[in-house]
Image (cartoon, rainbow, N blue to C red; front, side, top):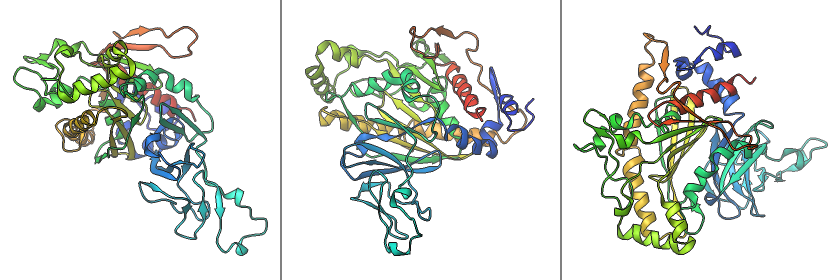
Length: 438
């Protein structure tokens, strides 16, 4: 039984092979420690380079709860800066996005360049002897990594290298980006932003949980057990229920825990030969013209459904989007859902993909609304102390271990049915590693 302390032994006692203690979702002190040791040390998704296409462009976001800026500097580089004036600590930029030739603090007018360099201090004759502009540049994220335009940062000066952290998930990112005839994607089609009254880990677990789909999303399934069509050109979606049991087609989906808390679930193979619509056919022709027929076939073959880059970003290949999870409090989480635009694809397919995302993953959509309701009920249910433990034991002991490539340095992969909970157990293994690394 956990002793209630936040020492390494006390934290370790909260995670057992097939269960976790309710405190990891409900204890404000644990949440504060997560902000320090997990979100303060891990690699976090910041944004995409397409969100700052021009010099002077910026977006504001939070890494954990620390406000940051992602900017495009004059030399074309992308920078990640702390959004805090170095004079009196005022949040430098309040807008979510925009373009500025320079960043001027509203309080005393200190002016910074887009790379964080302090350019000017008004009325500088009042500065202390020995004052130097270069001593007051904006703080920069100690480490930044970029893959295919996706920008990640760590607030820690040391830790696992970016390349090693991202390696198990590179092909998941590539799987989405390669669908663009132009070889690039853009996040410039708006955002769905909403809050839910629940712990951030609920959303992180949910995106790689295929077990809940036939039940949480029962309203999306017809009497034959088939879900509504979620891809442009399909006449119907996957069969998820057969009578009162999970459908054989749905059971064929696989889940992969690939280390560092990352994981992904495979896609359901649908009737690819019958997939057709004016928008889909035009897009498929554009992709084949750009990369060749054989490569287009490879790119369009269903492989990856949901990919979770632990701890704060989900990449979905079915209803294409990036989902960013922002913890605000132990029982309050913000989610930002960004539609993906395929650069070089016909406008019609990008419009259709965005409209389908509105149907599935907006706050009031057919799918996401069910999940948000479940998260809120879960947080409310955890107030009960009838049981102190949360069960995550599905598939425990029957995982298949896949050895990594020799010399890759990657951890072994645990594979099994995506209706099992191996990926969730992998998340808590990473959680415990961060939390106990004082």
